[in-house]
Length: 128
Image 1 (tube, rainbow, N blue to C red):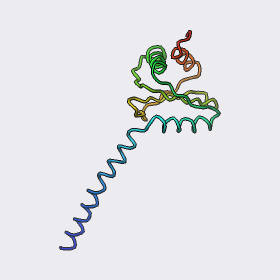
Image 2: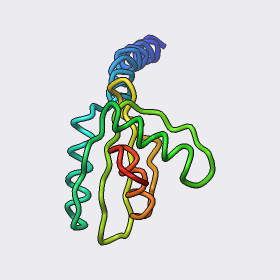
Image 3: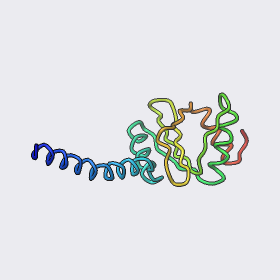
Image 4: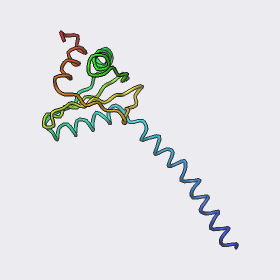
């Protein structure tokens, strides 16, 4: 009985000490930095003959406005920074969203090149 109680206490102690570490790992995964996500986009798009760009501020707002209101059904994507990866071999562009310094890893939007160019032109303030 004494060894059973001791074993249960040790098991509980290891679970309690594991929980904060597990929570810290979850928190670290929950907020990935812009630079980390940009690096991932650079590497992934380079494997397919492309590259990645970053849009901030007014350009990101213009791109989002066009994406939310003029491509497909109305949407409500948010972000103060956008990471955009070009995948020419695959025939699409992926858009990732960063809000308040944290990348939204659950949301990526796949665009065809024509839709991307229209949104990008809107972001740059040129004729769409």
